[in-house]
Image (cartoon, rainbow, N blue to C red):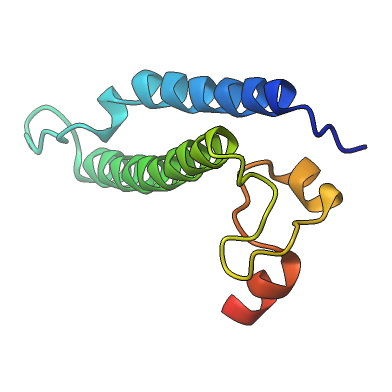
Length: 114
């Protein structure tokens, strides 16, 4: 069921943004520098810590991309362009917007981009 009420869409996008920002704040320490003091930790523990840090950095990169998508969707809401494909200008299917309210393109343009 598609809700076309701009206020409902805005609330949903803002809630998603707040959740992403909260997650970023919560995991900030895990993305920090890994201390490579061999006397403090064994080699495998350091390797695990480095792998965990790399995963957290990648997660943060993806989080930043999603935040940019949400910000762009909010700007489209403000300019009354929300719900229209940024590539072709056609209306984005309601079902697609329900699945991802930050999506900028219709299904046809998304397939062309792949």
